[in-house]
Amino acid sequence: MIEHIVQPGETLWAIAAQYGVPVEVILEANRLLDPYALSAGQMLYIPPAHSFVPVQQPPFFPGFPGLERRVTRLEREVNRLNQRVNRLEERVRRLEQRR
Image (tube, rainbow, N blue to C red):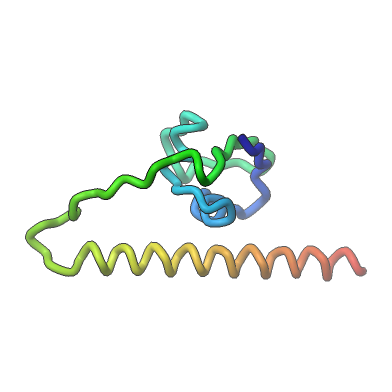
């Protein structure tokens, strides 16, 4: 298991994307109830990406065709944007250290 120290501004979704682990797996491994209640300096246990089996979930809203696909696409976009924000934050940190 990996130990991850939460950095200021990090989200659980960005951390999950960084390690290739679903948010739900991190929530369960750390017995967290609220994915929004992270604190800078908090230590999280991250299970290895190969230690879980993805579960195929039924559609959320069977009466709304295409909604599940749209939600999945939006989740991927959020993860991509979180990764970009993390890279930009790291770049800012490096630039600030040069001063």
